[in-house]
Length: 258
Ligand SMILES: Nc1nc2c(ncn2[C@@H]2O[C@H](COP(=O)(O)OP(=O)(O)OP(=O)(O)O)[C@@H](O)[C@H]2O)c(=O)[nH]1
Ligand SMILES: [Mg+2]
Image (cartoon, rainbow, N blue to C red):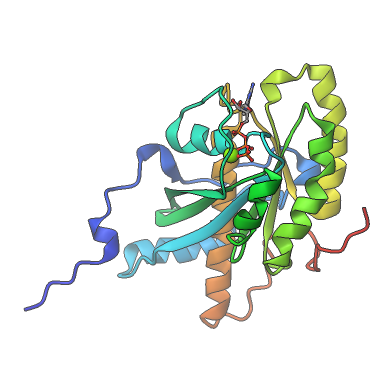
C-alpha cells in the first residue's frame, strides 16, 4: 500500500488573517481594475465545487514591485508580510523575495512577492527578475512628484519582460502619513489620471501606520486569483466564459504617449 503525501498537506495551515471570503473593494472607483462588488460567479462556483470535490489545486502568482529608490517598496512588503517597519533606509541590492500564502474562497493561493531595487546601479540585476510577472506594482512616494513622473519608465521596463495584455497593474502611492490632506489631494489627482491612462488600479498607503496595506494586498491577491481561476476555466473547456475580469478594454498597455 502506498501513501501519497501532497505538497499541500505538509504545509501548515494558512494564517487566519490571510483568509479572503469576499472580494475586497477598490480604493478609488475612477482607477480600479474592476468595480464589481463580488467575485465572478463562475469563479465562486468553481471554488465551491473544488472544496467539496477531490482536488484543490495549488495556485501561485508572481508579483513584482518596482519604482524609484527609497519610495518604500521594501517597507510596504515588510509591513504586510512581517507587520514590521524600519525607519532606516537600507537599499535593496538586486532583489528580495517573500512568499505570502492566502486562502481565497476556500482555495489555497500564494503571492510570490519580488521586491526589486530602485537604485540605478542595481536595476540591471533586478530587471532580470521581472519576467513572468502576473502582477506589476509600481510604487511612488506621494510626497515626491518626480517619483510619480518616473512611473511610465518603470512600466515600460517591466512590460519589456512580460505580456502587456496579461499583466495586472497597480499604481501605489506610498508614505501617505507624511503628506497633509491638501498636498495629498493634489498629487492624487495626477496619480488617478496616470493610473487611468496606463490602466492601473490606484492605491495610497502608509507602511509606517499600516493604513490600507492589508486592504491593498488582499485586493491584489483576490484579483490575481480571480484572473487565474477564470483562465483555468477557459482552458479546461468552458469556452463560453466571456466575463473579462478587467473592465478596461483588452489592448496592449505599452507604448502609450506620455
Ligand atoms: N514616514 C514613512 N516613511 C516610510 C514609509 N515607507 C518607507 N519609508 C521610509 O523610506 C525609506 C525608504 O524605504 P524602503 O522601503 O527601503 O525603500 P525602497 O523603495 O525599498 O528603496 P530601494 O530598495 O532602494 O529601491 C526608509 O527610510 C523608510 O523608513 C512610510 O509609509 N512612511
Ligand atoms: Mg528596497
